[in-house]
Length: 331
Image (cartoon, rainbow, N blue to C red; front, side, top):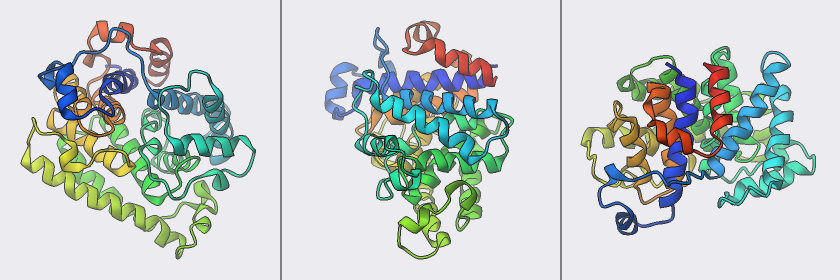
């Protein structure tokens, strides 16, 4: 079925669809396509920093696992190198987020990653790139949890960024394992409640001490509480079921991590059996369209596999060969 391949292709396809509509109003997007269900993939299907940073994480994860079981230092070292290489690359010209740029500069100086992290930022750069951690089947739940927070923390250290990254990774993981989409909201809520005061010092080290706000448990609880409130909004949006409404009006524009997660998941759950429509719905939105469609594509691809995507779309997506290589590795 190729669920990992489907997720890797889907996130890049969604990214390329949303790249065209990001920063446009709904009226302006309507000039591109009068019906959101018909939004075309550009002939040159270029992606954004979302896919570039996803591939950076994928390469670091592959390198880490080649050395043995996944542990913090084994992931942090190649991930730091990949992020700094991305920051320096001439191909890093796709409107990257300022938090990622500033944090990667600080990482390049060799300082501890906790000092390079931006604890004030919960931007969607934290979780737009996390899908690979949900696709490696040999990882334990504890490794997925810790590593998803660690990869966020290298740039976005806000507790909500950490929590939203973990929820995003587990959504991909559960869908790839065959969990039914209708089960996801309750599973996610239960997971958030269970994790609410669990600060994982093994993976995060002393990150919370940079915050100067209460105990480590209080630090991390702030993030899970924000995510739980966003899950409330997701439940209300699913109950309303307004397929033709701008999804950003229900669960947020997606510039921050918990909203990117919830709005992308909303688009997928409204159209769980139509992956192409799900990424189009996410791309035709008033918010951070590329990140929303990127995540919706990862969810839909993990659910439906590589057959979810039109062959002509796959043929022209940027970074196609590398995306397929990682899909084959993890399938």
